[in-house]
Image (tube, rainbow, N blue to C red):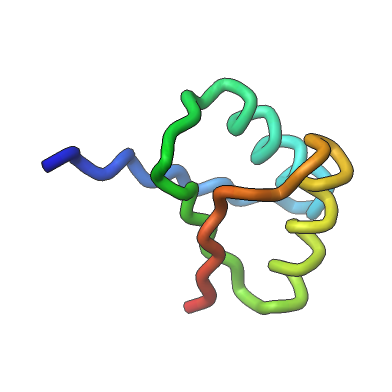
Length: 68
């Protein structure tokens, strides 16, 4: 069984810097069939992040967004 990747906690004061950190990290991570898990505090922030990732990377696919 393949071990789970480490959890990365990214506290930021602005959504823009959080998004920049997330997309920079995604560009460096190897791609596979396992979706990236992103925990967000609300569905509204999830929707915004999905739109912004698609604008920056061309597509937002392979993510599993969860809310607490």
